[in-house]
Length: 166
Image 1 (tube, rainbow, N blue to C red):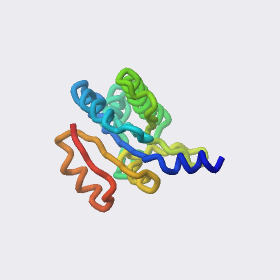
Image 2: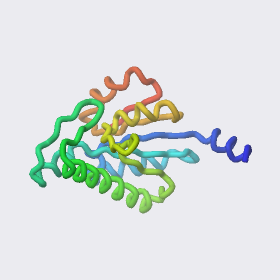
Image 3: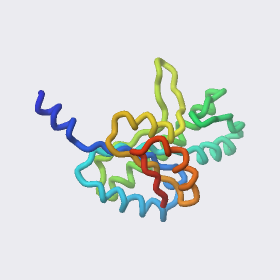
Image 4: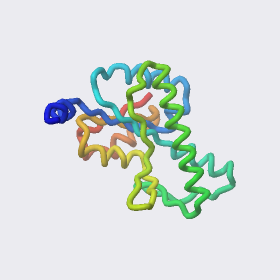
């Protein structure tokens, strides 16, 4: 048992937060898959976002786009929470499929929802990168090229986080 724990402790752990806008662009996804293939022998966890997609899905379901802040989104109605959960889950499912097709089936994919007690908290995906900072060796926030400058300014206080754009 002690040997197993030692091996796990030595494995390089990589956390990647990916913007939902990157996931929704086929050309950006191709670049993303090629980039992910460069990380050999690393334990990788990806958190996929989807804030803009959630807003669009709210409009489709005639739900008022609920207030959210830097920390995340508080849902005032069960329908809003369900629509947001479905949007994020669809992104995660699509990403898992793409990872499998690209030969990267062992990458773990999560969505930015944290359960505290019996309450689900919809956390901003960027905040998940901040939480992951405590346990991961290397972290990336992947966004669109247009948002690189803004994102980099948001993570200046965390030198292990690298912001990149596709």
